[in-house]
Length: 357
Figure (cartoon, rainbow, N blue to C red):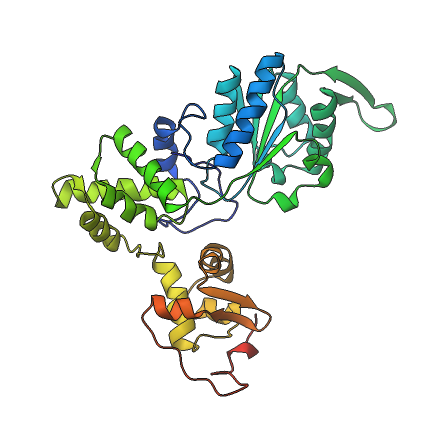
């Protein structure tokens, strides 16, 4: 349903990864909603964006530039395509990493049609020279093309047709203020509630011709980490299980059994997440323990633990980052069915905080 947005952090081959893989890209085109009425969730952003687009259409003008921020898989690319469809305009899609020189951006901008929507994914990863060129293009619809080198270089002004830039970022804090200020509308994409994900799953099931009941959709939604892309991926895997080992109908029991096969537990944790928690609880008594030590204990790279596993564990309240190291919360002990050790007054259960954080 509403998925998109590539993560900048490489992830292992995980069923609960928010970044799109090859199969996701192939399936998403058929499942994407075509207008704001079909788009599920993000109610505030959707209502605000609807006003922006309707006002622009009534004025007969291009829409203001739009910045969409939020985690991967929440619908930023989908909304950019909806903006183009609502404005009756073509869309050009590119990404920040693909624009490493100002000339790359100038070539794209100079070929835009009037009213066209330019979607720039991962806008925070664009090169600084291109970024500075974008300031003038967004504000004055003009760029200066430099011809020649050295003292003989000449700046030739190039007028651009009015266009709408839709920027998407997973790290809005990395955008410089002059760039953020040039967007007329900024929308932050939130994680989805389970009820919203159930609606996403039911819609996708209809489009995929999959029979699913309410309880089955709720079971998948509860394990989807608040992300539509993950919900759709889990739906496809449960569909496969139901087709091969059940009667093709996805019920709560079928969904739970299928996701147990794929090692996604009731809270959406997968093998890597549980390995981190189990090492933290069983080997280090709940912490504090340094990140490097924890990574060695689970047999993963430090960056994998920090950037792939930890964000969701922290968001779920299962792990805390402290100055002394990583610490498990009471919810982590309860989730794994373990009893926390008794700690001495004013002390800790071990010396793990001495290791590298």
